Image (cartoon, rainbow, N blue to C red; front, side, top):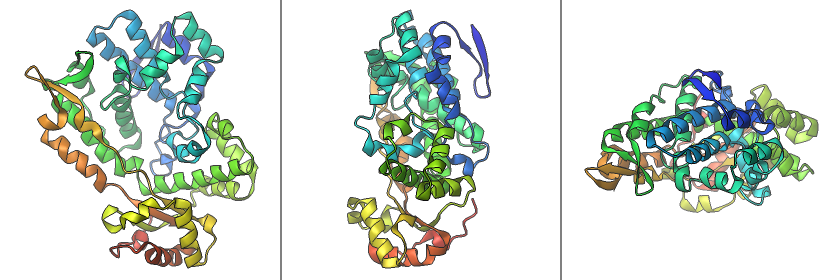
Length: 394
């Protein structure tokens, strides 16, 4: 058995299958992928990795599996899924997903490929673990609810961990109480009445972390820039699958080697010369028809109106966050109810998520005024609420 010192959970114990999985090259690659992508441009301490997070998710999954009284083979399956749930991530975590998704055939294809190849395949076979079963658990099927669900060990760990490394004080979750009050009821993972407050605090933390960290405007802008650079590199002949298999260091090196626009975007990010906000508004300011137009077409229209190069206008229209957390089952007085029915705060949180959504137009600082005025005309903004007038610091 090996004990790994973790700043969030104390000591994480690895032995047997878990230790062998962690030592595979496929898992070790996650040491070189930042958990929060480019968030270190805002929070310099946010340099923690997918590897750390995977160990944390495994640790919590192991605690919950023991608390639920799972059989050894079930514990092994849940533990393997928790360790491997991020093994298919591309470089810079979620920052590259928007660029790569259109080029890749299936969202989970690479995960299945990874589970069936090389040293990882050998370890799984040695312990009787099957790739389809692990993939199903990662997708939240059956006992996979522990790993991937509305309230799961993945979310518990990343909220606490991200808050710790960013210094944002919104990730305080009583995880031990929450784990203690979770149980299986008719094959479904539920939270007992005594854990409702802990479950609610997790959802509050997620709501507060979104605008403060995950959707901070600098994170959104830098992610749009890196996505534009990757698309250019792929259009120039680089394989999307090859980009997906890279780690952070390899990606930045490849962008620099690609030259031209891709290299310029990479250099801007490395030196933190990122684009600025020309428009940054909520749903209430937009005509609904704007969301039906492709980002590329909007960028071209605004570029033509502003008289600037379209490559240097980035449109950020993130998907409206689907927040079904309120439907997580709570077992209260022998009856299963949706969490929103037993916690009034949860129903408020579901509505509050939409209020944190922002639509952005980003450009070079010298083009900011022209682009802002052009965007106002092209988008027919309902309110004169252009955030480009705000002072951008961090």
